[in-house]
Amino acid sequence: MTDPSARTLRRTTLAAAIGNTVETYDYAVYGFLATVLAKIFFPAASPGTALLSSFAVFGSAFLARPAGALVFGPLADRLGRRPALVASLLLMAGVSTVIGLLPATSTIGIAAPVLLVLLRFAQGLAAGGEYTTALIYVAEFAPPHRRGALSSRVQVGSLAGLLIGAVVVLSLNAALTAQQMLAWGWRVPFLLALPIGAVGLYLRSRLGETPEFEAARSAPAKISAPWARILLIAGVSVLHVIGFYMVYTYLQNYLIQQHLSTLTATAVIAVALFAGLFLVVAGGKMTDRKGKAPVLLGTSLVVLVVTYPLFAALSTAPPLWLVICCTTALSAGPAFYSGAAPITYIQLVPVRVRGSVVALSYNVVVAVLGGSAVFVCQALVEATGDPRSPAYLLIAAAAVSTVAAIALARRTASEPAPALPLEAGR
Image (cartoon, rainbow, N blue to C red; front, side):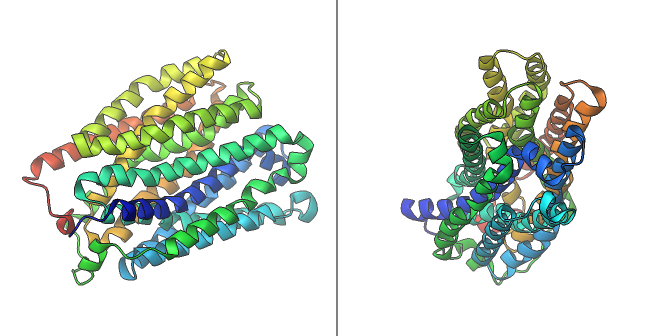
């Protein structure tokens, strides 16, 4: 297979990444507006209970992700990567727009939170096929020596979505009063998903199918030792999933509870996200140079060691400059790791069943751990009264992924030589 031109690679990675930008933008907006949405959709509850309810609705989208994987994963394997990418983005952008138009509880009563849950569930269906299919699409286009670096650009799209969401919410909080945010300002970020999605749909409509998928159409849809591969993907993804949602979604609300204003807390996360854009790319490039297992193992160990001291520092209400430093440092490990993990998922599975297996393996972990991470962190604080307690969840995630990285290293060491692209993972 002839390596694609630089122009083709740029167009491919941009089109793939922008869908993940829309996906994580929607998730980020909900997370950053959690305290506002709690008042709009759960006005009768106490502040703590309302916030927990808002986080529970946030988590409902994650429960739908395995179902989305069962729809979009086989679609990507049977009809192609491109149709799955277009369909998932269309659903994601459409649902976000409807959320922006949803009446509040004060207008339609209990129907408002019920509809919000259903719409978040629909978002989860779309997300169940979006991220992994985009990763697969880029990896199957990329030259073998650049697959880690180029796959990480899809993750950059995810962080870009979070950063855009943070900037939009930050701007609205700066420009509007608290009453205006409650009245109508919260709708604006959700409605902005429509033009972003339209750009993504235009770019994806011009994509062709990946060369590897075309070449593998006639190959048998078989995979050896499927459960071993699924468990390995799941183990690697634990730190990826929990780390990502903890440091870029929950941490903003954590800082607010540590007596920072919403404006300041969102600005701190925006700084961490900006740094994360570069760390994700660095993580992907490092896998091309040093291999996947060493990078994943080293990063997991670093997160294991530094998480508790950083949370302990944040819990003491330090000056703003130290809050920024600790938050950025806390997010650095998960960001670097999330640049290295995606190519691992892809190369563990053969082309013919890659869409289905990777989507289901990854999204089951997201369903169980991603949506619950913000809820569990808040519940730990509520139950213990200890603001350092969320650290335990991130430490546990790093421990699990450390074990998975060791297993990956042993698997890699037992393989005598790298497989050809179409044989990888067979």
